[in-house]
Image (cartoon, rainbow, N blue to C red):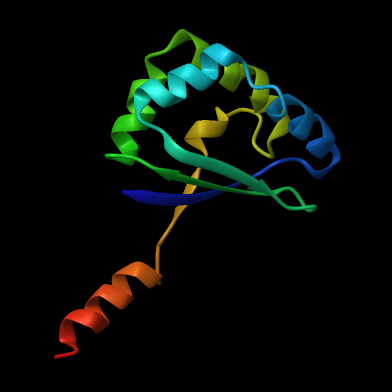
Length: 115
């Protein structure tokens, strides 16, 4: 499963967001990996638009596994003040985007119908 999601960092706190993500705690990195967050990336625009991409078995399941970890609770609490909705854990505010085009899928379909 491939998932793309968006969120929003407060524009005046972008530098702090970048600083924290330049040195994510090793225990947080391991927890993400162990919970099944594969090929996980975050992209940040100058206006605070945050776009994430992850490959996983099931997005709800990997989020639930992370919610069980103590390190995730600490990380979410620390990061919450940087987002537009500081009363909500950042990982609860993700807005999942619908995939409308996938090159590999369409190429496979086109190849299978070309006979």
